[in-house]
Image (cartoon, rainbow, N blue to C red; front, side, top):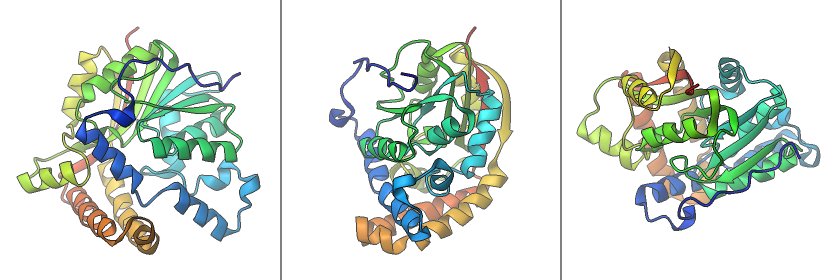
Length: 297
């Protein structure tokens, strides 16, 4: 079957029992994220969509939990030259919006990898609702120890996720392992443009769950160390700053549903940390980058 999931390779302790407190904090961060499956379904129903006949064209308005919506996914697909014949890995796939959109728009097959079980389960349910589960599957696993076979994918993508992962070299090593020879890695991430103060670093580490954000130069070094050839980089900082200002307003518009689901304290914490995050973009201390690199041939 074209979209059948890979047989899991047991390489590490199951995510649910990992002792790593940072990983558990990231899981908690996304378990209590304002954009979640329930909130998506509420918006679809409010718009009058028939959930029994849901299409990805309808779902795309609410399931893209990254910067730039499906346009950003399309740009990564063009950058990686993804076509219907390709098998694609979405690293840190969340609720699966980009994976579904890639399969829907290009006809490719996609595997999404994420270690937050609530996101993986939501991704599977939403994918079944849009009848894309023949071409899209999801695996729960650690991006630094992927439970996936060697040389299985033509391309890998990721969007604004690796800021949460301290060992970015391990992620890139795993991407090199699971990509076919000469496969393409196309990703976006938050990068440091100017040094953060001790307070800003602490708030990003503990509030935004981003303890060791890289610079673009550091990404270049890590890619080279894993024998990737960097073919292009693009500064997305100005575009993302505008998006993030709007995104903060959107999160604030979800205050009532966030409080109802996760409590007042979680909403206040989220608003405080995210306001600082947006402010760091406005101050040009943080920015965004899009990278295309080719795996070793």
